[in-house]
Image (cartoon, rainbow, N blue to C red; front, side, top):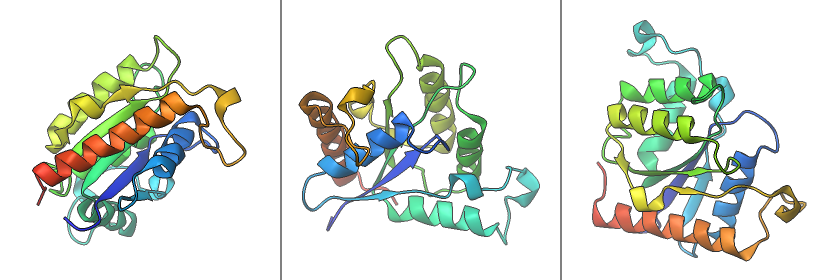
Length: 183
């Protein structure tokens, strides 16, 4: 594998969300030679309709599936809303079920919620990713609550411990992608 690519998927539409902070930090700590790409099209995806999951696909869906296909692994950071995934992120995942791009792709998530929260989103994420055929890398699925006092002006976590944990998450995804390349 040349330069491994990790696609960073935020489940939040909020500017400055904890989920965005985690993914910016993950990009910041990725080892040299690892490329991270943040997917920014969540708000552009049309509402999922199985009737529309056929050629020609809507342009934002083509872009989503192409981004997933180009990646060697996926890292998700998604909030919990009303005990589960936010509708916009569930919509993104629904659009991946009909494609094969995510099948066998090493995938992990970071739960950025406060202690004791976010379990519903994690459970739903695991279930839906099972339907997509993603290869969940359990040892890369972690909890890193974001402490706002530890976030700098760039929107990146400055504390060493969460930064080191995110670096391990990226390394584990790269290892999984190298050991079992998807596609």
